[in-house]
Length: 378
Image (cartoon, rainbow, N blue to C red; front, side, top):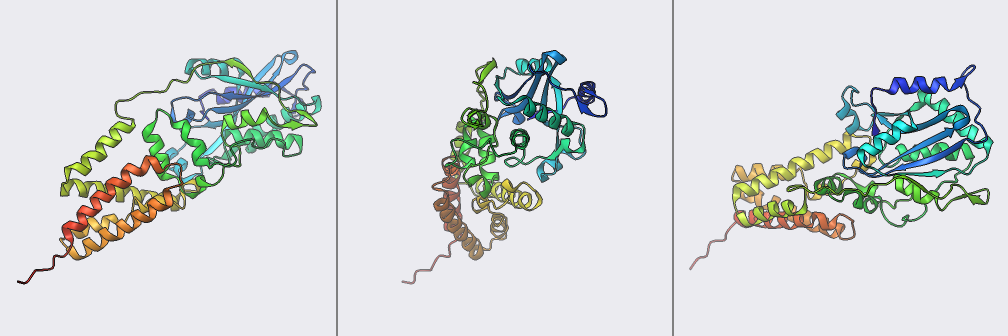
């Protein structure tokens, strides 16, 4: 996906200049080419997964334009709240091809092209649909991480043009969305950890839908239409090796050092701070799960580890209510065992395992400190 710039209005006017009569698109020449562009991964949050766009090139009409379904505007009122809730409006804009390529050159991100091998009539139909969408309210859509994004919108408009579900996912349909996403976070440890614990059951479903740019690229290479390949062999327009960032803190080592300190400190205050952080995160997960329209954030079983009830345990401990502090510590140890068993076959088990172990140590210590001692009578 890409953020919108201040040239949006200009881009719309450029496209309007390609139209004639009463909103009718320019008739494409026989030399016109329509292709799918797949853009490489970046190190900004919005670029972790790459990008998909459609290019229409027609030298006879002096036309070379890219349709981009991944635009959003940071100036949208309450941007963060809307993004979190899941009702942020994304939209389609256009770029000149040269402008589009210049931006990816600057960002040092690869761009691959696959030309659609379809008839002249279907090219014109797709071109007309792109323009009709761009010049109507249909250019806006509500972004959904898996179900509706820059890649899925490209799949939908091409399939709609072909009047059948031609583009379907090929490969990796027997692993979960969570497993598919994991490699994209290489070099971004805490982002990987964060998405691991904030996503719920939806991302543990089998990844049968195309939702990532390179999934579409790989699938296009394997699908056919009217008994012939749908696209030409992939062409590399620009290529850069992805740079994996390094950080002194955003890595597994800082994570393990922090958790090791908590375990080895054996300090009541440190234990309380750790449990407080877990409980506040759990409260956040629950609130977001109810508040957000993003189905990926609902039904989050990770609250067994990040239990909001830990806040009650802390209050009981501060109030020196040993009986109920002990009971709540044991209750959360049971939660932890259930969570561990449930997590064994999940993609993010290894990354949360150090936190499971740390929580186990802390809760056992709390239970031991507050266990009622039976007096020995001699």
